[in-house]
Length: 128
Ligand SMILES: Cc1cc2nc3c(=O)[nH]c(=O)nc-3n(C[C@H](O)[C@H](O)[C@H](O)COP(=O)(O)OP(=O)(O)OC[C@H]3O[C@@H](n4cnc5c(N)ncnc54)[C@H](O)[C@@H]3O)c2cc1C
Image (cartoon, rainbow, N blue to C red; front, side, top):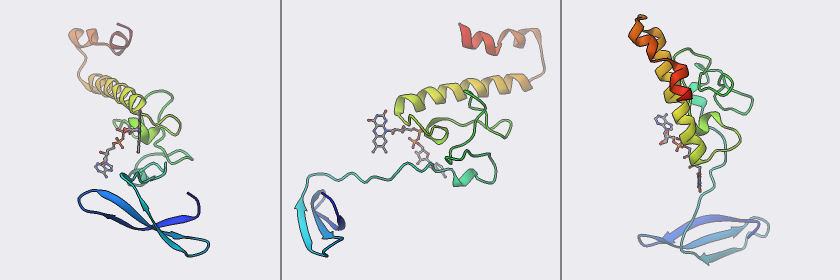
């Protein structure tokens, strides 16, 4: 359906009708429906970080190569907020795992070095 905007959503407890207005002719009409999906676009919600973290030209949080490391040491990003391409649940979940491993490595690297801690190496975590 082209050249129409929704002016009202009707329903009693659930959606069952849309009131429409033709943006060309101004004609009003209605359409019976059983559901409504609102397209919210793909702009990443990163304004919150604009003054703290480097962002890409696409507005996502800039990270170091394939890691989750942002421009601020100790701050890691995961999910759609750093991904201008795939933006899927499974890629976001994998990205969350990457960030968790980066956080673990970051914290371990800041602890006093002991032989026991050296055993818990980043590389071992990655390649087991
Ligand atoms: C309509 C739709 C359909 C989709 N269908 C599929 C599909 O079929 N398969 C698929 O794989 N993917 C699908 N996706 C994409 C998938 O939902 C996302 O890729 C995934 O949810 C990204 O996960 P995320 O954790 O990065 O972000 P989100 O799931 O968006 O989580 C971000 C969280 O941060 C919270 N938040 C935002 N701002 C603040 C703030 N200032 N303070 C605190 N919390 C804040 C939000 O409330 C939200 O809970 C769909 C997305 C949409 C919108």
